[in-house]
Length: 298
Image (cartoon, rainbow, N blue to C red):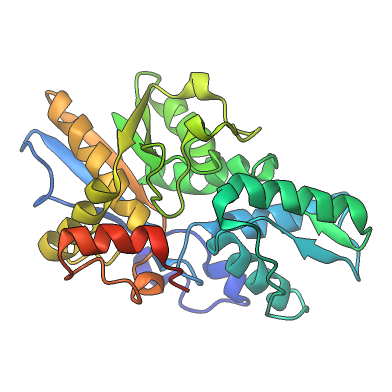
């Protein structure tokens, strides 16, 4: 947003993207490796999912699939649902949502299965399906990845959390166009560890948009790694980020240690304010770790 180019906009949707890319010199483990964070919490609803929601809705409108009177349906643990509610409101619909809970024991995979059943049983429902919608990675190819390439002369490694796979696929493709040798690495939670916003492929579901063969690295991260990471972001750099960002930072620092020199970019998917009801920042590590397992934050 150099030069105040977007101070005046015609729509809140115009403020999606062009998020800050900030160097984290106090967190890079080597002076020869520069570590940057893409701060997606700067989007209107506070997460990277604003990019995806806008792109999916506008693609469905352009194709004629999304008609007036239909109800958007999406399996989400939170951020995507909030982003879709905003996009719908700006386009003239209600800003709100009817929440249908799926069994907690089935995790996000259960939410996907329930949403598919609902979409099949009621023609009013229009399921955008972020897990299988090509507009998801396109949002990151045209947006997140392009912004990183425009800002940095060369990127040696990109790190993002393993969720739907949209960021890794889309931004990863764009960065590899600029540097074919760039490493694209995923932060994946240990099976059984609930790192909010991320998924373990060991749970048995691979999102259709995720091509695992395009990942150079897939590094496992624990709840404790994630909590320590979000604390480091706040305490050393003043970055107030969401829980998955701690996992991404953990992987980014590990890759930085492996490089002799270069540039590593960590995509921090959301801000920390949605998680304030669970004290990840000041509680003893064990208590903060436990809060990840047994509490809904927002």
